[in-house]
Image (tube, rainbow, N blue to C red; front, side, top):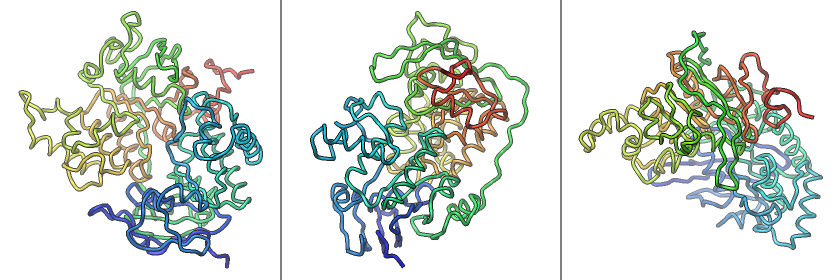
Length: 507
């Protein structure tokens, strides 16, 4: 048998009383694509940080190409032949592609630009080395990240949720690239919550649960249901059906919204129109960076329209375009932002204090004084009902894993019982079990008459949740498409601009 490229034995890592990894054994074979599966908090991210030199293990051994390896930094990992592309890109938008790559890879700009072109042609990662990053699509930015790794000549490439920001057409192209890399001698560690992708791409999978390895399998020999059961230790619930409802009242309406931001890197919005009614879920699809952040800020009230643009945003029948976020919340509006830390929660504050950020109108504050008993009770209810894995209501928000913090924020907003609920990337970074529970709760709320708007880059999520889908591309919104009568490929064409906003093919 071929010796492993990477071999971990008994790897453990703890943070105080939290045991992130416990006695992990893992072998990555040469020329393989190896999946790491697990729920939020299972230990996947910690394990990748240990392999990439971001963290050091408390116990256990690492062997690389049969020799002991101890890494003190990512730079040492790159020198050894280990590269990593994180879920959130680390590129400077004001620099060109070659200038970004030159920050890690030494060499003259002209020579590096030629290497970028050569690698792009060889592996289907074409990108203009002289283009500024802010002008690139998200798929092109991902190519830059992968090229930057490849220029360090890695033997092992770690990819963290690489398809979460890509349209269906770009996913298949990425997979073709990864297979070519594997065939060219690069092994790949692939982290994804999309089980169908893992079955299509990966030849081995290691499953983590609670910091332990619970299995090493060939994912092609198991269906998605079986893999999910191995991950979460129970059967997945069946999807909740959406009940047919009579047309409800308009809870949100945008009428020909135009917005020209001051930020030169922000996306202008042009003639954006949509409506969300009671008992309805509208999904907004689109590749990241096409105006989602700008649209979310305008709807939430973080960005306020000038008086000259009145009558473009309505909530519950009222013109709210010039009202701030607090005034909109008083109309029974709730919002889950894309950015968990900094906008959805304050990392240094306890979960109880984070509850107060938006739930204070629920008698948690009276006469300007905190009712601590009620605030703790509210927080405990949220922790219990939304399965937030934490040591308690006084835990700092920043101490939670990304997925558990997301469950807390979603739960907090739903517990406000709003008439209109707006969620941006509601299950981003959330494991399959928790994501299924959140989606099921949203459909229940929709069936009870709530109006829900969802911006998501997960097409599967939008098809599971939405009654209607609109696609945002370069700041323009497509017409509403009836979800049950629409195929993912059609949404994908809108996402890459292969339709005009009137639904006609571009030249």
